[in-house]
Amino acid sequence: MSESGSIVDPDGYASIRSHAATVFHLDARLPDQVFRADASDSLFCEFDSILVPEFWPAFCAAARWHGDERIELLVLEPDGEAYFVPKYGLYPAISLPVEAGEDDYWAAIGTDPPGHNYSSMALSANVVAVTGPSGKWGCWGERGYEVAVFRGFPNAATRSEWQAQFGPLLDVSDAVNSFFPWTFRRRAAPDGYVAALTANYGGGEDA
Image 1 (cartoon, rainbow, N blue to C red):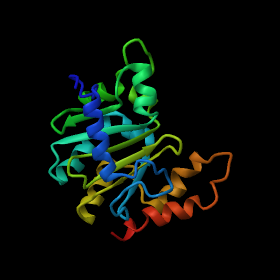
Image 2: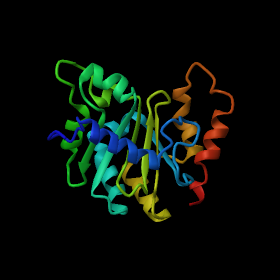
Image 3: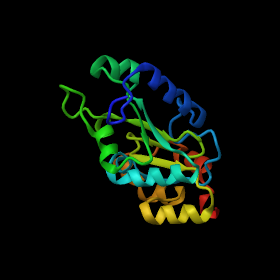
């Protein structure tokens, strides 16, 4: 592991990926269910907002709810072994302590691989999964749909406070009207997309 927190060895990458597989369905994609645990408390935000330093405190807050001392971020697309390793010589995953700051998070995801400009994880990641050792919370983001979804709030009050502090973060019913019209601009949403998304991630309004 480098000083920035990037995992650069295969064992570290395999460990993070293996743990992520206990929290997420790694082969699933929105609007299908990507979380293994109940996701009725989910909140949505824009994809790009989770890959900026300012969102690090939001991840840290979630980690602390569940006693996690570290936060793990895994890039699922492009694939680590098929793309990142051959092209950049690194594995696209990080593990940072909650005591790390925004600058540390940005150094880990925003630094270009040597000799490759504009190729940082923040710019090249298309699907990401974020969680902590407890596995009790998670954030899943997809660049293609331009959204990220978060679950794992210990109670409704905490959910409301986190939403107010780190938003805009929206319930699925509001997200389909606010975020997704931009995603599907100039084209209709795929058949059943909104219904599937609502079925899999709805219910948080009543949390």
